[in-house]
Length: 623
Image (cartoon, rainbow, N blue to C red; front, side, top):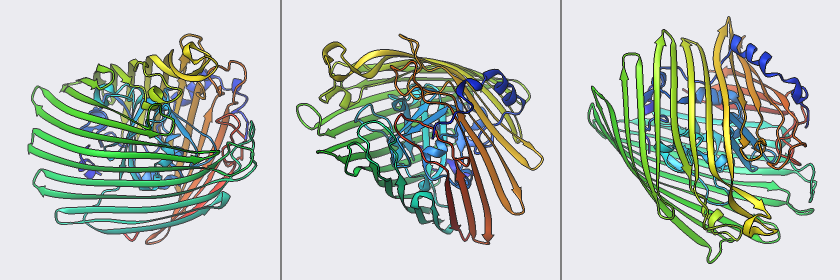
C-alpha cells in the first residue's frame, strides 16, 4: 500500500517503591542530556507514515520514531514486543513470555486504537475488542519500523486514534545475499533463521524463514485455577517480497507473510491449554511516476488472523480483512496535493456469534491532503470521509503547523480527530450489543525539537479526549448480572514525552521519559495497566572489537483493573545488557542478558514475566 522503493536511501520489586520516583529530579536528569532510542533515524531519512508518501524526517510535523534494521539486529531481542517496549510513548504488557497475549498502549490509549501495517498490509482482528495480534508478528522478518504517535484518522481511517505502526520486511538489492542464524538461550529457547535477498536487472527479491521454540516457564503465579507447568511456545514464519521495475517510473511489488504460533497458557487446574494463532498477509502494489510532479499508487491487500484454543470445548475465531487503495499525489510550487480512495472489507467467523457464525461489513473512504513548505514555515492539512456499511458517514481531519524558528530548532502544533467502529464481535456476539456507537477522539499536541548531527532533543505535549469508549461491563443496563459490551466510558489521555540522543567520547547515549495521565473522565481513575511514568536510558560503545550496550527500563506502579483504586502492581526497574562482535569475515556473535538483576515484577496480575534470561546467537552473512 506504500511505495516499496522508498528505502533505497538507505518478580515484584519497585523501581524504588513507586513513591521514590519523583518527577522533578528525573526530568532534570533527562533534560541535561536527553536522548532518543539508539535506533532513531538520522533526520534526513525518508519516511512514509506521516503522509502516506515519501517525506524527509526533518520535515515531518508529526511525532515519529524510526527503528532501522541494524539497530533491530544489534538489539538481540527475541520478540517484537520487547523492541516496541523501548519506543517513546509506548508501554507493553504480556501474560507471560513471548507468544502470550500482548497489549500495546500508545500514549495511554487502548491496543485497538493503534493501526498497524506490514508492508502496507493492514493487520487487525475483529474478535474481542480488536487490535493487532502482536504475538503473531515475527521480529526475524522485519527490516524497519516507523512509529507515528498522535491522531491519524484523517490518513488511515478507523482505529488510528492513538497513532500507527508501519513495519517493513527486507527488500532485495543487486547481487545475491544469503544469511543464516542460530541461537539458544534460557528456558530451553532455540531459534533459527535463513534466507536470501538479491536482484538482477529489473527484478529484486527477498525470502526469509524462521523457527523458534521454548520450553518456557510457569507464567501463571496466582488466581484460580492454578496449573503448575511450563508454558512454552513454538513459532514458525516465512516472508517474501518480489519487485519488478516495469519501466522507468513504473514498479510492481508483491509481498507475503505467514506466521503460526502455538503457545501454552493456564485456564484450568489440570491440562496444558494451547493457543494456536495464525497470520497470513498478502499485498500487491503498483506505483507509477508519470512526471517528476505526479505519482499514482494502486494497492490491493489481504490479511487473515485465526485463533484456536481447546479447554472444555473448541473455540475458534478468524478475521479476514481486505483493503483496496488508489492514491494520487501532485507536487507544485504552491504545495503538494493528494487524493485517495480506499475500501476496507472485514469479516469475522466466530463460534460465539448470535444468529450464525459469520458477520461482515465494509467501509469506503475518500481522502484529501495538502502540504506546503514556505521559508521557515510548514502546513499540512488532511481531510477524510469514511462511509461504514453499518454506521454511515464519519469525517476526520488533521491540521498541523511547523516553524523552524532558529538554527537546529523546530516548533510544531497540531489538532486532529479519529474514530473506531466497534468490532463485529462486540456487536454480534452473545455478550455484544448491535446498537454500539463508534468511539471518537479529539487530539491536540505541541512539539519542540532540536537537532545537530548526532545530537537531538524533542519534547511533545499532548491531550486526547475519547468519547463512547466501549467497555466490557457487568451488571449495567440490559446486562443484568452478566458481562457485556457497552458505550459507558469517557477517557482523557494527556502527557509529555521527552526524547533525544547524545555522544560523549566513545559513548552513545539514548533515553526517553514519559509523564502521562490516561484516566477515566467519570471517576478520575488511571486506566488499567498503564503507568504515570516510564522511561528508558541506555548507552552503547565499541571496545576491543565488541559493541557493548546497557539499558535501563523503568515504570511506576499501575492498576490491574479500571475498577481498582487501592491495590496496585508495583513499579519496577530492569537492566538489560547486550554485546556483539564480528568473529570472522562473515560471522557475527550476539549475546544478550535481559533482566540482568533478576528482578521480580508483575505486568499483569497473577502472571509472571521472565526472570534473568540469557541469549547467545551466531549469524552468517557473506556480504
